[in-house]
Length: 145
Image 1: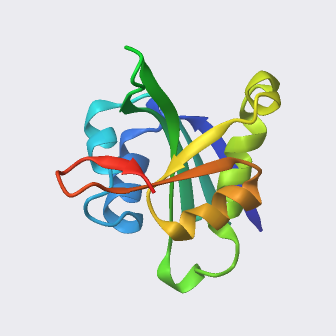
Image 2 (image 1 turned 180 degrees about the vertical axis):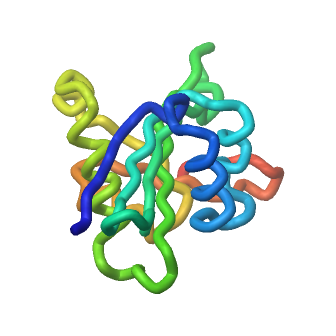
Image 3 (image 1 turned 30 degrees about the horizontal axis):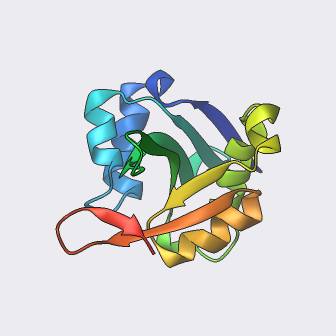
């Protein structure tokens, strides 16, 4: 039976953090840093019986200066699924778990999330989010695509 559990990333126990980092996350993901810093954000884990088959998470992120002295802030959305379980809607299922756990005030405001890969646009839309795609800017940073 497939189920989704959503919890604050800081509440994820150490053994589950390591399992997700080592078995379900590609190198270069910010999750590697989040494991060490116990960052804020929310994680949704999709379980098939006792096996974690995928996850999605959000984390508050600054996209830089808004040009008026303030910062442009987003929640990022990232997801990974076991290779043999891809194209089954698991990432969207996990993201939908996060979406349903967010306060209605954010949803009413057209809650936008930053995504960093074109495939995540569809995942985010299927979950109910309004995604904004970012791409590398050539200087090691990110810009809106």
